[in-house]
Image (cartoon, rainbow, N blue to C red):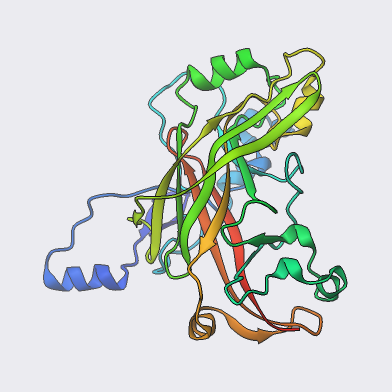
Length: 331
């Protein structure tokens, strides 16, 4: 459902899904939960220098058109509004993918997850062949194999108002209940079997530089069907506490932030590599994606576009990572 008018009387446009219409016809339709979202709003339009004064700071935001309701799952709200019990939060957390290249080569885009079930991985192609297809090595994750590349993401405060110190981490994140101890990851269960994650890792700054390393990997267990995304499974994995601080010997704010995706105090982090269900039959590539496609060169590929969703269990912040599941057909 969606609000269509924000001036005068508020109009609520509610469109039922197929399931909703079926339940209404059966006489057992009842709304038990609802959520709010503001995906259409660009808060960068808030103008504190408006010449007409403070009453007009948010004028452009209030005049932003709002999308009409859709029946597709997850079409209206990709990033819902969050609720925090505390009323004294000065800064709200966020989650970002770290592409700085610390500990692992910075990932390129689009990001490919290679189906290597046929024994020919994208990573074994020559640099010339990859370049011919406009693919570079840093765009390729090998299914379930973290030795080449992995996805690194962080939660914390993305603000230049606070230095990334251990004290600020404690004051503005840990003591505020904004330090994630776990992440939930949702993925399409038709093509992804599980998530490999860092079971033991370190991400810290010191006088000798930044260290980002994994000493042990684990595979996700206990996957359950997602309550929010049709056809998706959800797994819970642990989170590690970041030690990327600027208040250590020989480290400054700029050094600590150069290793991070966040400009302020860091919270939790994790590294992952999705593992696809192998082999993915060509019929599934055909029904969910494309087959025998050229990506600009002479090689042919099958591919499926999908996304994985990562949510911090304490912060409730969500990260969506687009993936292209890709299989080499011929060279």
